[in-house]
Length: 320
Length: 195
Image (cartoon, rainbow over all chains, first blue to last red):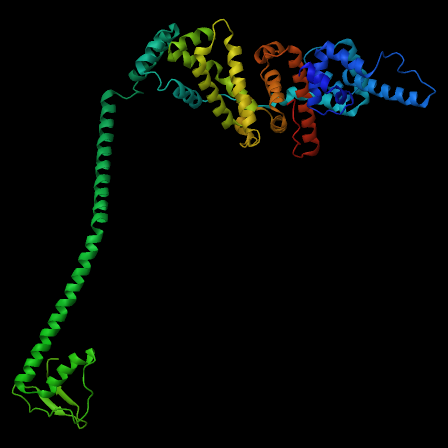
């Protein structure tokens, strides 16, 4: 805040009409700027002496009372017993000792003010709250992420070896690691090269076979999916061809019967055969006795015919 | 052991090992600083990574003769404040079980002590979330990071008297919010800090 802003809003500030946090800015500025502090004090009242003098005149009494209240407001704001002021002094006391005047104000006020006692206790307990916060430790993933996002891929193996070799303590670490490996190798805890190679070979073959089997399976599945539409069409065509063959067979059998009827002169059978074709088409004639042809005599082929008294010809022995 | 300034000089010369050393030296402090601003571990890790990336990109701007730690703190502070102001409304409070955060030492505490600490942690994080950016910064830098008034004044380029005033006001505000939370168990009214 600059002095111009402070003085522009001085009346509201002195009347206590400015709320936090803006009020805090005014208090800070007044505390740090002697000129503005003097200006604020002189603007409201004259010298403090005489403010407290009572006057028999009502107007003067009221004026004095107003001046007294405003003076008290200034004092409360910066030097007085306002709780806000006291609590700020209590917070400052966590870092360093208060000056004697502030210390005296606090000592006089706090025992009589429950709100300030509560804030005092909480301020003293703040370190316990701070200690309750966890101390985070960065994981290796965090460090790796930072390095990846900045310098990119981690240094190569030989770079790392060179860097480690430059540290004198790394020589002893490397020697200790080699000694440990040698001890493990000699005692057989670490398998020999041949054993490891054999196991690796077995794992490799198993891996290759597994991959091959999986590839074959996937290939077959892909082929099935690829040819599935064609297979469907083929099956439908095959079914249609079968039905056609059956129809041709039926037609051939019918033709053979008709031929036989003609050869044998079996008009009744011939009529039935023809009706058998025409009726499904809706072309067959209705059956009545007058329209029925006369029965042909029994042919030499052996087909017999008997006449139904109602005129319904029937034939026996035909190959229908 | 190389100083921070020597490591920075090597980093400018593209020494990857120097950069890794610099990161490992400051990552714990930065991660906890980010956590004290965000109150959330995942968010803190992201913010801390961003801080280091900004540091890496700004290494050549570091002027020899200055203190690296102060310069780095200023850079980190700016990012934390920006993040806090940007995310304040949308930030969720600690959403992971608090047990996940305890380090090895605290896991050996008696259960009642752990419960008490958990309660205080939740209260503190809730109260910190109600503070304005400047108030939270004052609490984090002075009380949680342990900086002195002089360091803060140099970092923020403001008078020591203003620093002391800000810290005092932030502490009183924090204490009042904690008291309100303890008393009513209600969601605290957002009481803006200094600004």
